[in-house]
Each structure stands twice: as C-alpha cells, then as structure tokens.
Length: 162
Image (cartoon, rainbow, N blue to C red):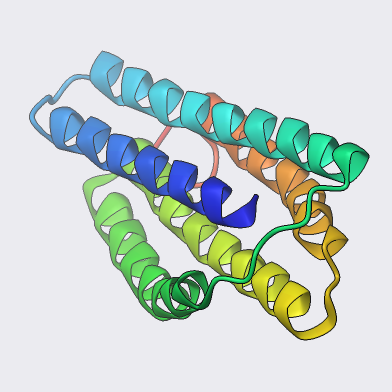
C-alpha cells in the first residue's frame, strides 16, 4: 500500500509542479489563488486515498510483499526531497507566492511519505509486521489533510503571500 501511495504522491507532485509552471506564467492574484486551491485539492485527494486504503488494508489484512526496489527508491527520495522542498520554499518566499510555498510542502510531504514507505517496507521485510504499512498511512492522513487545509486558506508562506 505504501509503495502505491508513494506512486500516487509522485503523480500529485508532478501535477503540483505543472500547476506552478502554469502559475509562474501569470501575474495576477486570481492565478495565485487558483494555483493554491488546485494544490490543496491534491492534498485532499491523497489524504482521502491514504485514509481509505489504510482502513481497507487493515480490515482485509492485506500483507504487502517485500520490495528491495521500493526500499532503494524510498532511500533516494528521502535524501533528495527535503533539499528540493527547501529550494522551492525559498523561491516561493522570494516571489511572495503562497502557491509555490504550498508546492514546496507537497515536496516535503513526499519526503515524509518516503520515510513512512521505508519504515513500512523495512518492518514488513524484517519482522513480518504487515500492519505497519497501513498504520503509517493512518498516521499520515491527518497531516496531509492539514496541509491541504492550509494551502486552501493560503496559509504557511509569509505575511506578504496572502
């Protein structure tokens, strides 16, 4: 489940980046708000998927398979995504763009999901704890929803970004 969730987050990360490319071509306040709302919707979609899939996995007792490729991907992402998130946040604050800051949070969230993915895959591989993956998704869902709410409201940048 975590590996699929990570893949969905990667798609959302790409869509968030495309929204920002579109947004950077615009200069009006309406484009900024629209970009923030679209990014917020991606958070809400991911949060809903994580919550639903995690509950289903626990209920159905779905046991994830071992994935050494998934573990390697999670480690690489865990190393790269925080650096990319900081760079995006700096650019967002420099431009006064709450949408860009929200996009940086999407990238930061990808790093959190990488850590959760790594923990879930490692605990399953090492100890056979099939439920760790689903539990991690349940822990992550409220965080994802909070980030979505903040992006929707235009929070989380700086005083001049609203």
